[in-house]
Length: 77
Figure 1: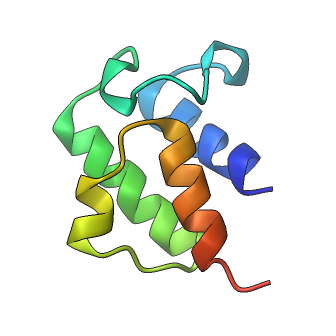
Figure 2 (figure 1 turned 180 degrees about the vertical axis):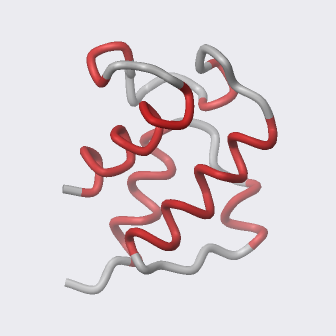
Figure 3 (figure 1 turned 90 degrees about the vertical axis):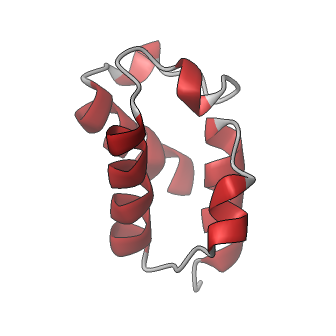
């Protein structure tokens, strides 16, 4: 569920279809990437998945899967 949710957010923020999003790529290699959209991604992921990410955790996110894994670990089941 977390993967689909993150992909949906990315699609909306970066104006991409889900089939254009490879979760293995680096987030900063997304088409239309900029730092503002990246921060919007982090904020929306935190709000919609009800998680809190530390500055250290955020700075260690490289790929979309990194964000998915981190949010999955923090999501209350």
